[in-house]
Image 1 (cartoon, rainbow, N blue to C red):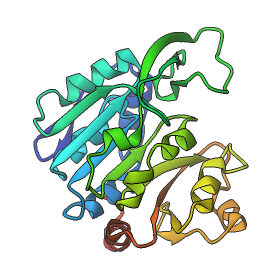
Image 2 (image 1 turned 135 degrees about the vertical axis):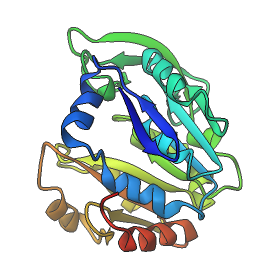
Image 3 (image 1 turned 135 degrees about the horizontal axis):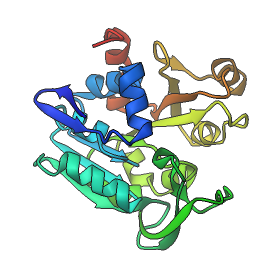
Length: 256
C-alpha cells in the first residue's frame, strides 16, 4: 500500500504490517497533533530529528517541511523499511542505532513479537516468550543533532526517554524542542516529571490546544485513559522554536 503524504511524498506500507494497516485503513488520520506540530515548526527550524523513526512516516512527511531530516531506528528489519521509504529523499539522513545517554555502546535490543512499534532496548521491561533479540549500537541525541541548530526532535524510544534526554544537554540548551509520548498506563508520568524537574523547562499538552502543564495534578487530569498515548512538547522557556510551535499549533486547523 502506497500512501500519499502530500508534496509528492509517498509512504509505503506492507499489507502484512498490522500496525500501520490498522491505522491507515480504519483511522486515516494518524497522530494529527504531531502533524500539526511539524507544520507549525516549518520555517522556524531547519532540522527535524525523527528518533525512533520506525518505518519513516514522519521522516517522509518532514522532508517537505525541513531542510534536513535525521532519522534513527534501532531494529534492523524496521530500519530496512525506513531506508525503503526515505532512500530517494536527498535531505534525509538515516542511522541504524538506538538513542541512548551515550554513543558507541553495544546494547541488547528487544524485537516485540507482532508489534514492531513496541520494540525497545533491553533495560527494565521483561521480554515476552516469543520476542527476539539483536545487538545495536547506541547514539546520543547530541551526536545526532547538528550543533548550532534549534532542532525539532521527535522522541519515540519506548522506555529509554530519560536516558535519551540525559544525552541531549547541548540540543536543549540550543533551543531544541522534544515531541514525546507519555502513556496513560504510566501513572507515575516518569518522563514528564523528569522534564518538569529540569531547570527552566516548559511542558505543553498538545491533545487539543497547547496547554502548559502546571503541576502533576494538572497532568493527571489530562491523562485519563490508561490505554492511550498522550503527546507532549518540552523545551526551554526561552526557546523561540517552542513559542513558534505553540502559537502555530494553536492557530492551525486540526484536520488536513
